[in-house]
Image 1: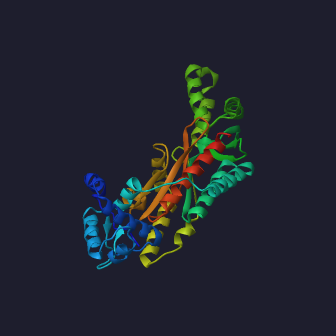
Image 2: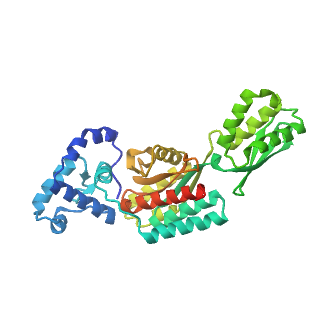
Image 3: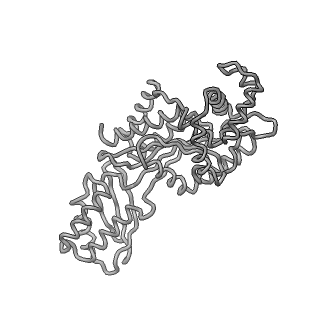
Length: 367
């Protein structure tokens, strides 16, 4: 089923009704919980007659309908069709996740599996390979699409070399400690002597080993300010060009998406297929995914994004659960997560994503 179309007043309505949501009595909360649980399990609306039979309290269908009407006026549930049962709105799902979701520990079997797969990948693959394995694993465990975004600045460097291709272009070869090699074409000043290429490479190699690009850039900037004579003008420009190229200058983020096909499972209607088509189109653009994941870096722990709370999901009616991971200096260097329909199993996937992020962080920190 498709969630309601994006309501431009959604953020304001959430704020205005928050005090009313907090005052829901036990009966209203129990009925609302069952509406949400039914939706998360089946994706279908649930009616008052069914609820009156499964509630832990004795209520007639008419009494249940009265409570459901109150919940609908609060914006927590809605009827997708005339005379149909009720489903949670995006506001309802947000309230459920924030105020009612009970998240337990990840079962030992899943913790063991996650740690074993990620650590096995780390023994034989580059960091990119490890992150790809983590994304694929999350996709398989959650039946959603696993996503990871990190910056290329995070790699620990080993060696750099410049090779002149044309009078105004050179090939910059960057080798990381994990064995990955990145080649970039960089612009160089016309007339630059070959000795300047060697000098620039030597200058960088004396400083980069075991360090990230961001660390090297900061040190070089400081060194240039305090000892400008160490490099002549042309060589300094080449060093700057190489560092800027590797940093990507606007394209330094790397996106890994695995398991999109899982999103095609359990489609219930033509509108579901259209919803997934829209999400696939957004995933292909990558920019919106990276923007969304970057928001997950703003703070510790797992972040949950539901439907129109973010423009990426405003049409597709999807959700994302994401958690950041840190480098040895405890700086956030990437985010991993799961994208799926709004009826994701939040209670199961939240601790799964959180634990995977912690395993990745421990590996990056050499623990």
